[in-house]
Image (cartoon, rainbow, N blue to C red; front, side, top):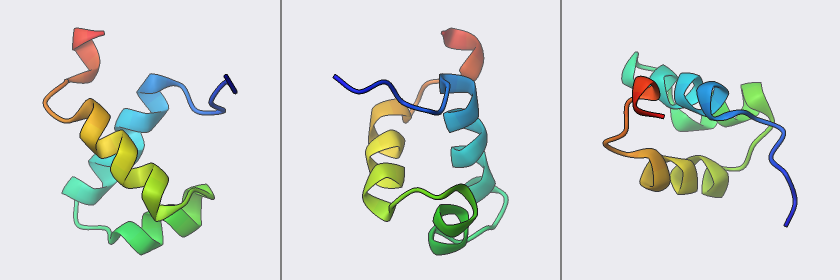
Length: 53
């Protein structure tokens, strides 16, 4: 299995950007990820706070 180039804390930071009003398309372009990756992370980490890890 390929290791992610983003740590879990980085993923939480990326997901938080949407909560602050950025569009998903803008976030994906900025970080070089696909929309599928963004939504997969969102479903995996929904309801988990970064301090829970």
